[in-house]
Length: 393
Image (tube, rainbow, N blue to C red):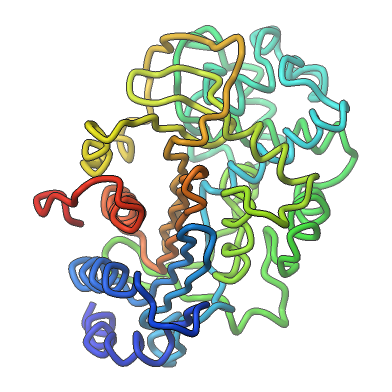
C-alpha cells in the first residue's frame, strides 16, 4: 500500500506530462475530468487511470499515474488494461454480426450449436444467454476448471429458474454463448474477436492474450487491498471476461459504440442491435451485453446514485417483460462495467449527444466508484443535470 500511495503523491506531474488532448485549443472538459479522476485515485489509492472521452463527437484523452508504479512507467494510450466483463459486450457484438449475416438467430436454441447438452438446456436461446435470462448461475463451482469437469457439472445441473423469467448475471451463460459462436463458425473466440472487431476498427492485435512484443505495455494490476495481482487468464469462459485492450484501442471502440461517422457498417448495425432493449427489468432495460438506462431531465440525477449491491448480488431479479420488438433508444445512457482481480473498467455512451466515456484503472475498486465517476463526467459535460455534491465519487 505504501508503494501505491507514493506514486499517487506525484499524480499532478503525471497529469501534466501525460495527458493527451485531441484539440489544439484549451480543453473545455479538462477541469471536470481532472477533478473527478484525481479524487477517485486519491480516495481509492489507484496507481494509474486512462480516460477516453468523446463530447459532441470530439475525442479527448487523459492519462494519470503509472501503469507499472515500481518501474515508474506512466499510463499512456498504449497502456494495456484488462477490461473484464466489457468482454461480454464484445461477445454480444460477435453474436449480432452472425445474426446480421443470417448465420445464427437470436431465438436459436443453444443446443443447436453446442451438442450433447442435457434436456434442461432445451429451452435456452442465444438471446437468453446474451441478456442473462437463461436461468444459468453466475458461475460454476471453484473446483470446475476444465471443460471435461464442466461437462460433468452440466450433466448433474438442473435449473432453478425457467429461461426468460429471471435475470441472473451469468458468466457461465456468456461463456456458453462463446462456445456456440465457436461451434457455429469453426473458429476460436480469439480468432473471431480479432477478425470481426479488432480488424474492422483498426485496433491492435490484442485479444485474450497480450503478444510478447506488447508485454511492456501491459499494466500491472492491483487487487482491492493494493497488492500486485497476477494477470488474468479465464480458461473456462473467456468470452465472459478475458479480453485485454489498450487505452487507444478502447477510444476506437468507444467511437463505434457511440455510432460516430466512419464506423464500419459491419460493426455499426450489430452494435445497435446489442444496444437495443430486449428485457424490461425494474430499473433498466437489458440489451445484448449492455444495460440501457432511460431517463428524463427530472430523474437523471438518480443515475448518479450508484450502489455496490450488484457486486455481491447478481440476481435473481424478476423479468417484467420480454419485449417483442426490441428498440434502440438514442437518448438513453447505455453502459457496461468490467473487472478482474487487478483491474476495473467502465464504458458508457449517450448516442444522441455523440458522447461517451471509457475509464480504465489498474486496481480493482468498487463498482460504484467507477460508474459514478463516469456518469458524472458524461452528465456534467453534456449539461444533463446539475451535479449533487453528496453523490460525488
